[in-house]
Length: 463
Image 1 (cartoon, rainbow, N blue to C red):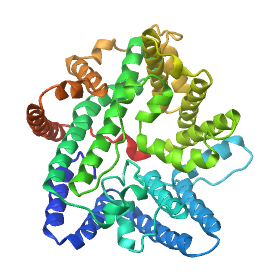
Image 2: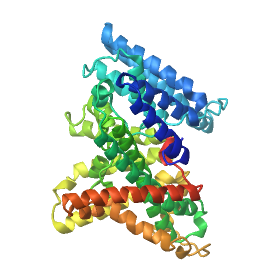
Image 3: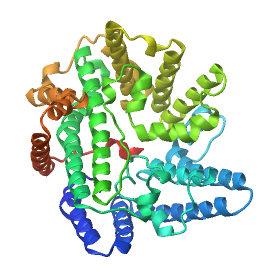
Image 4: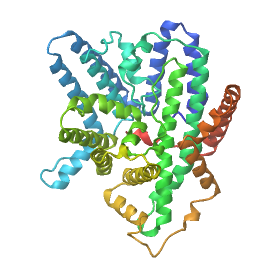
């Protein structure tokens, strides 16, 4: 079930909200838990048993880490078990395929289908166990409360990644207010509009262009495809995060922000402070710092950064493109540390840093979007004029019609925070009125577009 589907918007969400606010406060966690399991089972009923197994497994590990001796050994087993589940479902086919290609072994191929949101499920479970080991939280004795943390439908499918210690108190005791409901629904409406009005519109263009043979496109079409995909990915995922944050607030939870205008960054380092913030925080807390962070030698710091971004690439998918994409970002972050890019603060240097960052990010998105490294390289050759095709199927204006052009302008304004800044220049009362009117209008437009279109993918579901 998608947040942007009619069945979620018109049946599931209103029904869950109605039941949630009717029942006694002590029963509300159970309402959310049942709703979350139904939400997941709607799209992946065969993997509901896996979800329940993960809950029982990590509930037991949590109690064991807190209670018994040999805590480090228990933690190691817990981490290994969770990662084994992730590796089997997400990377088994990839590993077998590459071993067979090397010709050293011939392993029978099993078509393992990856459960939706498996990476988020495992990362939530790991953060819970590790936080207990670090004595940052107590083990959750109520298995239903732990189940709610792991399966809460607002973040189960595609994040953001919520660390247990960030919402432990609210799982056990939170305040449900009408202010939370109004804020949550407004935040949800903006996320829905990002997804439906911008991501879907520009996504159709990028999908068409990237599906073409690179031998029949020119550099203008290639650049348009890359730019449309950059906006599609940002508005798809940040829109989903806004919807998740909004839904959580409706039910009294305060999730941390997951995006902070990443396309205004002036370095790749800054980009990763602004892009998918919850993933960056997770890797910093549970991988980079345990490896030693920047507390040891410079060489060790660079190795740690290399490992983190290699892992970031692998986390995103079982494909060499993702591995190269992660290393691509990691290499530039290391270079920025070596050459201290943050020291270049003159106006023209800041402009050049911003242009450099957008180029590196855009090239990375081509790696991220294409199916193979070969196609990515050929696509980039066309983009930068190293490959000129004599025969081109359509010119750029076939794809860049008035609707797409307007969407690109709006996307540019929204992604840089200009629109938000303009609204905040209004007085408080006018700002409140404009936000309320805008949120209602966006919901209406989004619902109309959902009803009239069959194109409604969520990119991050595959992660």
